[in-house]
Structure formats: C-alpha cells, structure tokens
Image (cartoon, rainbow, N blue to C red; front, side, top):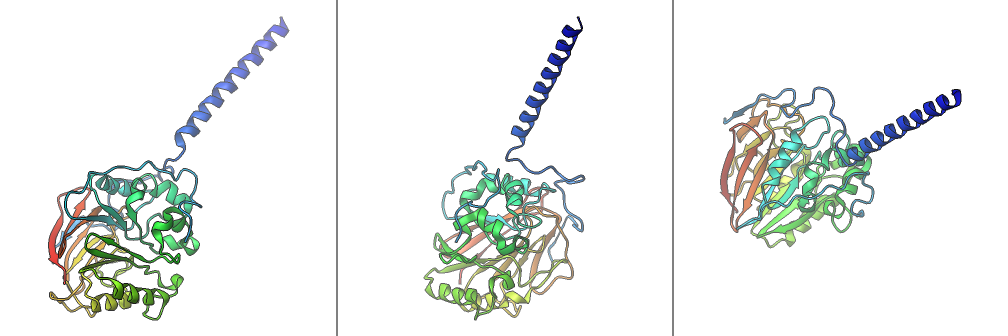
Length: 346
C-alpha cells in the first residue's frame, strides 16, 4: 500500500512539473519580439513640463541588432501625386506610449519616412532599438531615412543606430551623413553630433562633404535634416550655434527647408538667414519637430522669427514636395491643434 501511495505522489509531482513547464514556455513564446515591460506610471500623455497649448506669437544591415528586432512592415496607402516626406524626432522609449501613437499616424500616410534623431531612448543600444523602436516606428523601417541624435551616441559610435538601420544610415564611406533625391528635391541628412563625428565646421570631413554635395546638386529645391536646431525657443536646449556652419553653407546654396528635433516640441519659423534676420526672398524655413514620442517639454522666451509654437502634443510633420514649392502639415496624435501652409522654392 505504501509503495502505491509513493508512486501516486511521484506521478502527481511529475504532472505538476510538466504543466508548469508548458506554461513557462508559452509565456516566453508570447514575449519574443515585444516591447520591454512598461515602467510604473507610464502613459501616452505629455511628459513633465508640457503645457498642452499652441502659441501663435558602412555596416551590414541589422548585423548587430538585438534578438527580436525584426518587425513586420506595414504597407501604407500609396501616394498619388507628388512625393511625400513624413516624420519626427525624439521618438521611442519603452517607458512611454507616444511613439505608438505617432507610429499609427505613419500607418496611414504613404511616402518616405524620416527620423530627426534620438530614435531609441535612453542610450540607443541594440536592445532599445529592438524593444522600443522596433515594434512601433520599426514597422516602417523599409521606407525610413534616419538621422542620428545625441541619445543614439550614448552607445559608443552610435553602434546600435548603425546596426539597426544599416546602409540606410550611412553614405558610401560609412559616414553618418548622406543625401538622396525625392522627386525634384535634393534631401540632405547631416550629423549634428559634432564632436564624435569630427566636427561640423567647413573644414571638417562633414563640412567638406556638404560643400561638395551642394555644388554637385542640380535640384531646384533643397531640404536638410539633422538633430540639433540652430534656432529654437525650447526651454530645454534652445539655439545651438555649433550647427551655424551648416546654415551658412545651405543658405549660400539657396536651400529652402531645414527640419530639426532635440527640443521636444513643435515650432515653425519664418524664412530667415543665418543671422536670424527674416528673409522672405532667400531665407530658409526651419521646423523643430521633437514630437515623435519622448517626454514632451515647453518653451522659454520666443526667439526671433518664431511663427508658431505647440507644446504638449505628440505628432509628425508631413511635407508634400512639388516641383517648385512645398506644403507642410503638422499632424497631432490627439487634440485639434494643427499647423499647415505652403512655400515656394528659391
């Protein structure tokens, strides 16, 4: 009798262990490729300091990516007519849901997606790109032209950024600046993390490349994208003089539009020259679009030529690039504050 009881107890223990193992394996399977657990208190709303108001005054593709970084791609509606460029900066954190909201905007907008840096918080590691950026904006990776931000460089040499985006993030020499044609427009991507890339001045490798790229372009319209804004009313960073050489080269070449991030807000400027003097005839119009998903911030005292400032809302900017002009529309993920307009090429 005692032997039979012992056998029964052993049999029950085996069954319990087997069932527990199945449950554990099922949980692991469901977790593959998903985002990291949310931190307590995370939400889709604005970050600290947001006001929620508008104020009108050379690496292999994915070679070092973390496990789970492959994300199914979303097919947006086709673009009818002139090319579309859509994007934002300061994007993905596993502790916030703003990037999920802006990624849903991208789901419904065709065209080329761009980022304006600080793609994966906090440090741009391969794991953060896989877990935080991948499940949201990563579903548009195949049509994305990225920009590096300072948080991407918190992993040495922006290795996580380069591994995730691969050849789309670099030029033929493996540098993190490049250009491409979109319709009749010439689009230039620069790296404003000046110290780690060897400088942003005219004598640096990047500055010399920019001069050669502008001289070789035959396009009638030019747009440039990088992370740190030369002009900004944001209360966290504001004007950044280190990128002044970019502005002077672009202005001399007749560029039309500059898009930046870094300050977590949306701001539109009137066309102006590098000395912050309004210039409707030849000036560059700058947009700050740091509203991709990171914690939102507010504004300090408005700087010269600031036409519109929006704090407290996530969103993306959509530009339709015509042969000799452009239209813009900043689209929020919630609320009814929007911005739109048009401008000519020089």
